[in-house]
Image (tube, rainbow, N blue to C red; front, side, top):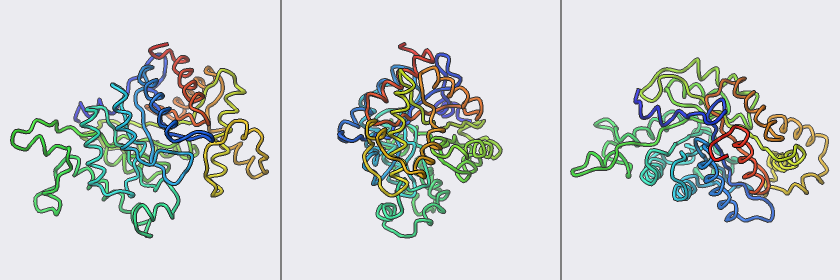
Length: 365
């Protein structure tokens, strides 16, 4: 195994946390707020996460959703790199079928040059949007083709990142720049390092593929909780040691929000639940305020959905959230928890991460 690569992947728990804690940010935009404000909040959260000892900070690719301003992860990560110094930054994830592998290799090679040794490339096979938007992104109506070709696309992307297409391959003379080719060019001093690849998923496909390839795996527990344990079991059963990892490393995304009072936490997470109701019924919009969410007249079907959705969000006081996260880590055997706090305003999200850091005695408390 490449020890340096393994060290880049594995996190180290801080304080009294049972496993490393990280942050997933969706750059959410609430009603009455702008994308500019949302992006500034993301910078504030990244700075807080860095100062309090969270291990990494990821952003996710979504499209055509007014309440989620993270359509361009590479652009956002470049901005975050300019405002942070130590925390790992990455995509959770980039949806590979939406892009040419060479473009991703160039984007993340650029990010690696901006923030050497602290960039992760998390990849998913879903579109991160609805079918019509995916067709516009890919300029094709054959959407299943992109998902089915995911292993081939992944192999191509890896070759571009490593600059090691075999002689005779059509792409053998094509190089992703910035990248390893600069280190092998006459007079070159560019590092040959590149971002570690993670596979993301909410079912068994990517779990098995990550295991077979010996890659780290991130599971979307925050919206597919019923599949978490089966997917992690499949990943571990399928795992084959590689040059990247000698043992499985599984991260799970967790929806969690702490507040000073339990009732306030409930008010905040209800805004995200109402957003999901609207998204699932084809009416995506900005994240509603707590006042609007509380006043909303949920239909019986909507109420059933909301009740089920909220059971998978760890929320309450800091101690209650800590207890819930500890239980989840124990129940799933996850090697790392990546917390996403979705709420209307940035203040509530910042306060949540502060409270969680305090509860675990992370640095800076």
